[in-house]
Length: 300
Image (tube, rainbow, N blue to C red):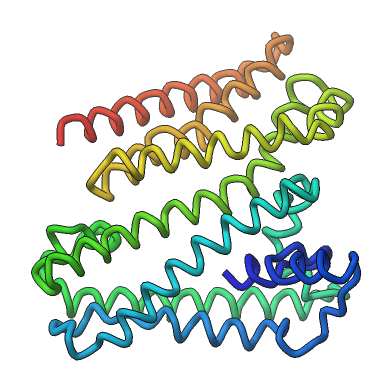
């Protein structure tokens, strides 16, 4: 969320920088105090304080208001940023791999020690954070805690702890979070995905021509976002979008697409049956995984 608000190096195409650039004619000093990342990280952390562990919502009305304000602010920020990116012809710059590696941009100049320390620190932070989330949810949901704890955040599950209106609001906030994740993650990852895919199918020249066509690239990104939005809006239970996403998009990217590319590349290598056999195995496994995942959702 800090990247969305402030942008990520090297171009800093975030919400506030874009607004300030528009007002100041294209130049901005990223060192001014209200663009400092630690300040916004602290603000976002405070707005994201979970109030679900307290059963009486009346006692935490200010936390609930802050949480609703945070969700509203995140949604509006994303919409405004997407509009600015499109109107300023910056959609291609915003939806690129630089924003994925915002942390890596802070590590220049690269040294082995710096990379090792940052990697171990990130791994430790993730481990502690996930353990904290896991223990807190086990204390809250007990034996009903599911393998993916987000599956507990449904309207029916939350109604045991919150008022019906608050449970609906919290479940809706989870859906919005999935939608935001799709809006700001899938387009970012689609840049290298589209580039590599078109390079494999049509060569480097075809990939360069395809990726330089900003209209097609941007429309592809928003088509994926629209698909995520449709699933989130139509399907009521949060576990079903998760299962559908895993059975379709994740399965395709992990098994089917690599297998098809390998078969295309190795089709003329008659003497090397090993890669083809492995590719066919991945293709069959990916297809079975997709069918089983979709059927499991339909059966439920």
